[in-house]
Image (tube, rainbow, N blue to C red; front, top):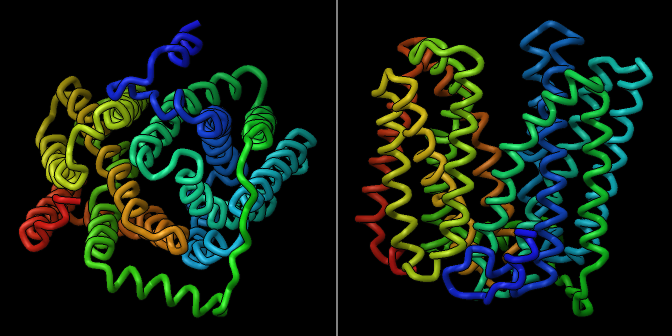
Length: 414
C-alpha cells in the first residue's frame, strides 16, 4: 500500500523517491538490486560464520574475506575498460548469472555436507572476481537509466538500498541460521539474484551502439588514468576518497573493539551500534535524494567531509553507550553523504566514453584501500588504543579536508 502510494504521488523536487517515480528502468533496477543485496548480506554473515565453524581459526575467517576482496583490488581498474567498451547491460546480466550459480554451488556443498575451507576460499574468490567487473559496470550504468540531471539523486537512492539491506540482511541471516540452518542463507541469496535478473529483463533500453576501440586494453587503461591525473577536480576527488577510505572507513572494522574495550558493551551493544550506522546512512541517502538539487553538490561534499571527521572524533571521546549510539547515527548520515556525493560528482564530471574507467578508479580506492586502512589502524590500535587509533585517522581526514578545500576552492563550486 505504501509503496503504491509513493509511486503515485507527484514527482515533487523534495520527494526522495522522485528518480524511482520518474524512471521506470531505474525503478526495476533499484528494486531488484535492493532485494539481491539483502541476500548478499545474508551470505556474507553466513560465510564468515561458516569459515569459523570449519576452522575455528580467525586467520581462516580473514583469509576467506581477503579471497573475496583481493580480486577487487587487482582487477577493478581493468574492469573500467570493459565497462566503457562493452554492453554494460550484458556484462551485468552475465555477472548476476555467475553469482547466482556461485550461490547455488555454495548452498549445495553446505547442504550436502561436502563443504570445506578450500570450497569456501575458491567460491569466495569467484565472487570477488565477478564483483570486480560487475560493480563499476553497474555503477556507471545508472546514468543510462536516469540521465545526468538525476544522477546524484539516483546514486543516493542506490546507497539507501544498500544500507536498507545492511540493516535487514544480517538480522534475517541470524534468524535463518538459528531455525533452518546456515545452508539456507546461501539458497535465499541465490533466489535473490533472480530478482535482479527479472528486473533487468523487464527493462526497455535503447539499442546499444558498439564502441569502436582504436586502442589496446592496456592503452585504454592508461588513457583513463591519464584523464584522472590531468583533470584537477577528478584527481582531487579520487585522492580525497583514498584518504577517507584508509583513515575513516576502518572504524567499522574496529567497532567491535570499541564496543568491548571502550564502551564496555557486549555483542548486543556492538550490533546496536552497527544498526545505528545503517539507519543513519539510510536517512542520509534519502535526504540527499530529496534535497540534493537544492545545494551546490561540491559545497555539500566539503561539509560532509569535515563533519565525517568531526563525528568520528566525537565517537572516540565518548564513554557512554547511549551517546555513542547517537553519534554513530550521525556518522552513518554524513558518511553516506560523503561517499554518494563523491561517486555522483565523479560521474557527473566524467565524459560518457570514460565514465566506466573513472568509476572503476573510485571503486578501486574506496573498496580496495579499506583493508590497507584496517591493517594500518588495527596495528596502531595494538600499540596505543583503539579510540586513539580511530581519532588519529579522523584527524588525518580533517586536516586533509581543510587543506584540500582551501587549496582547491573550485571543488566547492562543482
